[in-house]
Image 1 (cartoon, rainbow, N blue to C red):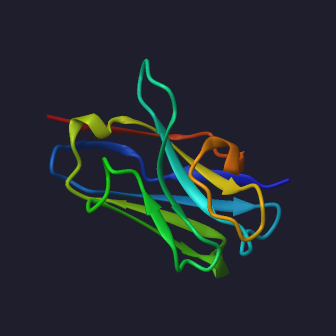
Image 2 (image 1 turned 60 degrees about the vertical axis):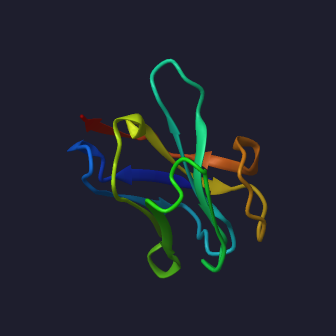
Length: 125
């Protein structure tokens, strides 16, 4: 069983930046995709970004494309989400997720089998 712990959330003004980190423990995730999802108050959890196990392929939601960058360091069992040009509508709890199947990079909740507890990101206008 893998445990995922996010950090790096906080309060930032619109236009600012934050970098989220997610450290995995319990088993190596070097063969699995990693992803980020978010859930705003009163809304369903939505896909933000995903990265393949090699780090060579990345997918982004249209709403964050060009502003967010996902990356990973397999030696540290860690993934990151660099968030720039933040907007108030980015306010949400951000969740780290580990892929369900080795070698496959998905973009839906079903494609990920392990989840972190979440970290709050609040963007003020």
